[in-house]
Length: 389
Image (cartoon, rainbow, N blue to C red; front, side, top):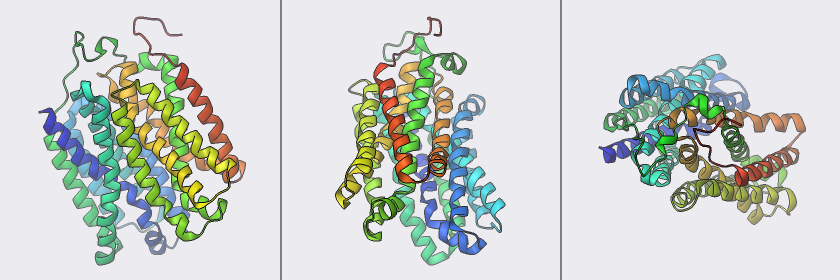
C-alpha cells in the first residue's frame, strides 16, 4: 500500500512541477495581451504566494476529505486553471487564473501528497522526500520539452489546453494510487510520535520561528537569484547573453543534485546539520558574487552553490520539521513554515527595488544567511512536556 502511495506521489509531483515552465509563456502572453513582459511574469509571483498559502491549509483538507479526494480535486483545479488561462483576455484574468487558481491547485497537491508519503516511511524520511521533491523538480524539466513541442506545433492557447489535460490526468491517476498514512503510535521506536506538536503548540516554541526564518532566508536567496540569473550574468557580471542563458542548465542540475544528495545525506546525519551545510553552500555562492571577479567559471559556481542549497533545503525541511515537531501533524506544521516560500519569492524583488540593484540585495541576503547559519548551529529540538520559552 505504501509503495503504491510512493508511486502515486511521484506521478502527481511530476505533473505539479510543470508550473515551473511558466517562463516559456511570458513573451507569448505579453504579445497576446499587449502588456509588458514584467507584468506577465508577476503572475508567477502570485502563483508562488498562492501555492504557499494552499500548502499551509492542505493538511486540514486532508483530515476532512482524505488524500485521494483532495489530490483529485487539485488535479481538476489545475486543469481548469490552465484551460481558463488559454482564454485569458486581460491582465486581471491572467492573475486570477494563472496566478491564484493555478498556484492554489499546485500548493494543495504538492505539500500534502509529499508529507503523506513521508509519513508512510518514517525510517527513510529524507530519502522519500528526495524522491518526491526530486520528481517535482524533474517535472519542470520534462514539461519544458513537452510544452516547447506543444508551443511549436499547436500555438499558445492550445498548449495551455493540452498542458492542463496532461497534468490533470497525471495528478488524478497519482491520487487514485494514494492512501492516507496511518497515525504513528506513541510506542513506535522509529518515530518520536510521543512528541507530536499541534500547530498551536509548535508556534509557541522559539524553535518554530527559528526554523521559519532559516527557511524563508534560503527560499528568498534561492528564488531571487534563480529568477534573475540571466540578468545577473548580463548586467552584474558583464557576461555575454549565451553564457548568462546557459546558467539555466547549471541551476537545474545543481538544484536536482542538492535535492538528491542532501536528501539522502539527511538519513545519515542530523538533518539540522544538513541544513547548516546547505547554508554554507549558499553563503559561498553569494560570497563569490560579491567578492570575486565575475568570470564565467565563478558565475556558474556561484549559481550552482545557491541552487544546490535551495534544492537541498526544500527537500530536507519536511523531515526536519517532523524531527522537531512530530510526524502526525507534519502537513499543518510544515505548511505554516512553507509560507516562507511565498513570502521569500516576493521579498527578494522588494529588497532589490528598495536598496537599488543586485549588490545591495546580495549583502542583505548574505547577512540573513549568516544569521540563519548561527541559528541552525544553536537550535535544539523542543520537548512537548516542557513549557514554551
